[in-house]
Image 1: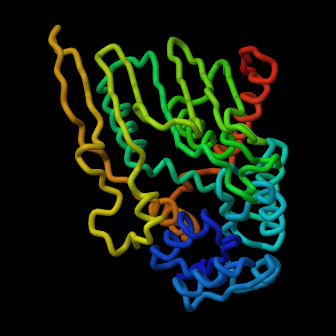
Image 2: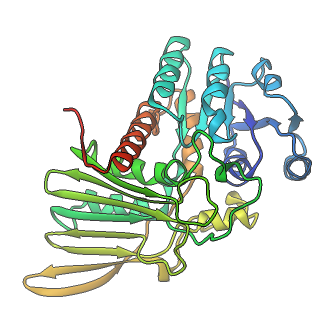
Image 3: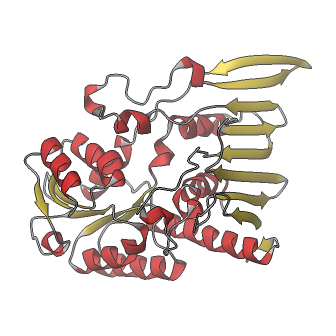
Length: 354
């Protein structure tokens, strides 16, 4: 692999603008060479932010370019599978925005193609690099709470009005809050606790006029451990983002990671010395039992950094690291989504095959 990796980005909507292009541009050895976009406002913004990047109107202009090494797919969920397949068959390494695909069968096919073509295939589960997720990892690794009995994780918003002409609001494959935000929460549960023994889900459409699900509660059951994953679009007063109960005490944390709002505001990660560092008011609270006495304290949040995802992509391609987010892991997330939809539609708990 050459020193610099040339990147082609397909899609410069919200995902491309906020989560992909700034991170790619922050890694010295990744060069954002081409962006595929057709909307005039998005093109103007891309040219303003990345004047040396070529804007193209067709994905084929990226697939057929021999100088492009890595294709990043930030198009709508419906097109993840066909675009990723075409990119792999064109001899490119591929990063797909989450959710990986709309079905497990699609995911399995892409994994087989990537293996056959000897190409990297990864999925942008960037929330693994949230401050809160890294803090939970520290708590688990250090066994601060002892044996866990219940974990509840939320990703809530308040968006009562539907967005006009937004593909996320249309009844299309891969649309709905379970695929969108649920993929993050399910990924976290799987990387922390592995494959559950059973799953139960309640998926609803709550907003007037909505075509796709905008609320879910997914429960994953392990041996003496229950994981609750919740998300809704009508949560005006947000409760805790993470609640963990164990034999030694509890951990409670409010607030979402600060990186998304910073990126939406146009901040550049490499220009911010304390990028991804949460303010003290977002730090989680530990309530422990010490020799029969309650001890309450704040735990300093671990810094979040979405740049680490693309840093790992470069290091993997250059032979310096092992891939953090594998396609197989992302495929397992899609499997849980399929089972959750089945559970909700049939009104029952589903046991997973051993």
